[in-house]
Length: 227
Length: 70
Image 1 (cartoon, helix red, strand yellow):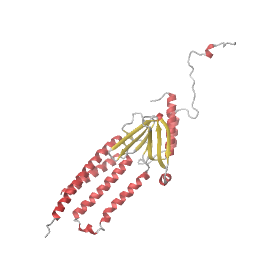
Image 2 (cartoon, chains in turn purple, orange):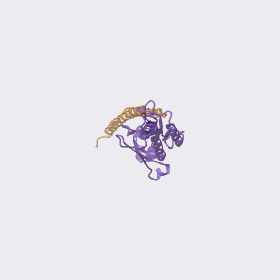
Image 3 (tube, one colour):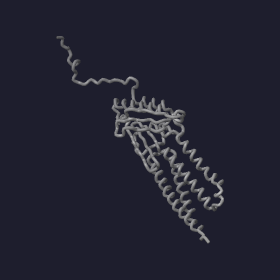
Image 4 (tube, rainbow over the protein chains, first blue to last red):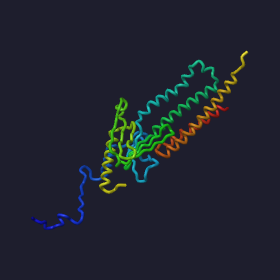
């Protein structure tokens, strides 16, 4: 039997580090740049799709946590309540055509009109707040869903990007197809089994971003930069 | 001859208006509190506009209550 002349080659005492570069990307910074290249830039601060916003912050945000994307339901979801509000604004004008209206004292007429406009204002305020504060956030570490239902109910749900298992989207109906918005469902391995981003713009881009962020997390784990 | 009940209706109307606007004022206060809580949770560029609107709403509801009483 032929014996090996140098045993260190067969069974070395020290562990040999095998450095293997990932096939497509070299480091996590490149992945982040690719994410921003894909998303582009948001110029309108009231947009439903805010990319790397400078002003936006949330209470549960960590000091070093970077916000990549903030989403709200698509602006088209507001159209129905805006039309209702316009209809409500016209009611006092139509009331003047009623024969009984002329017999109501002027003071009560003014009170009634003001009361009606107040109800309209409250309706608009509630609908706008429900849209404005219903935010879905993708940071470099987490995916967050903050919802305020009917002004008195706050919901906060989050999952780490590394805990994401599957992501799917659904664009259904005429308006969603025309304006390119829909639901993005995120299945997780965390305590909250699913997060749903409802009626967000560009669901395909959101899925792509989440995929890239997962890739970045994996690269960070390889680089040993996991927070 | 039937008694004049118009006066009772006016009183009833006024009570209804005061109670209604009083409840509305409570609702307006809840909106202000809620908006302040929301803006603390999510900080964005246009938060101040939402706060201003909630206070305008509160001021108008106070005015409406005064209008019902006077």
